[in-house]
Figure 1 (cartoon, rainbow, N blue to C red):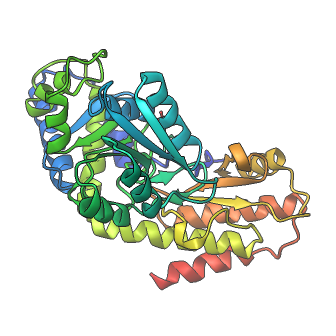
Figure 2 (figure 1 turned 45 degrees about the vertical axis):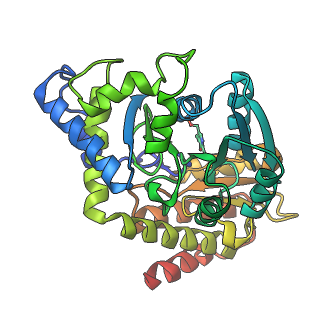
Length: 385
Ligand code: PMP
């Protein structure tokens, strides 16, 4: 029997649209080729304008972790005090990056499945002087969304002098956000909501962040230095590190798709699909790992019901065989559930196939549910849109 490749329903990489694959498959040209230079320039302008950034966007070869490192080292010097919030695996990664850098750092942690709140941050910032606040918009290990709008309002009112850096790896391009909310550095990478293959870090640095970097002593890092990349982003014929030519073609096509859909429509679509996925998992008896008001629009955790006897590895293997690749959980939820990514350029037929695969696999693994129960819930929510 002919079998298509499983749908990539892990929280990154995400399904890559045909036209983006085609863009990646374009002939590799010199980064001085005027066609690439022009497209790169238009891409940087689009990224800056779409997310209402009063500074500059950066597109640099590397993964999301490179973008995290680049994001913090350019706005925090050794003398600065950095407050890092974490409620899961990737927040902990930012703590690790900051502690290796040797910043004077403090942390606020929330349990996995919960979030640090704006009130807690306000309290901590009122007790002590901090220069930079770091947090994760969507914590991919739990699917919890940080209430970023509330936070930026609070920060504007009460701690306007503190710079804010946000890991938006699992949110940018899918979840409501604009730089003029008051964030100084936002970052993501290509394989999440932008729906491209892995390989690009994408950052937005507002005016304050650029000024902060300018006033800092030379960085003890070179590849990730804003000062090295700013001339390239302003004039894309310039060279610092070789741009990932084919991924730039691809990101440019991804941004074209985003403009065609409209950012606001894209944000609504992600929330709608997330609601549909949550409803279908719950109808199949999988429990959420967080309160519904914290559930992110881009990734959802389903915990195995007590006594279901489902073996995690066997179940995810069965889902793969049925045609969808979902991810395991780690940390506090390791072995207790799975993660489904639903971000980027996906549409209802992909969701239907993924839920159908999960449903068949669950039944094959001995989970006592009626065939169609998850699909019916999914379809009901999809029809609301
Ligand atoms: N932050 C978050 C929130 C993530 O989800 C990920 C990747 N899943 C990263 C950072 C790291 O990105 P990368 O694996 O591309 O280095």
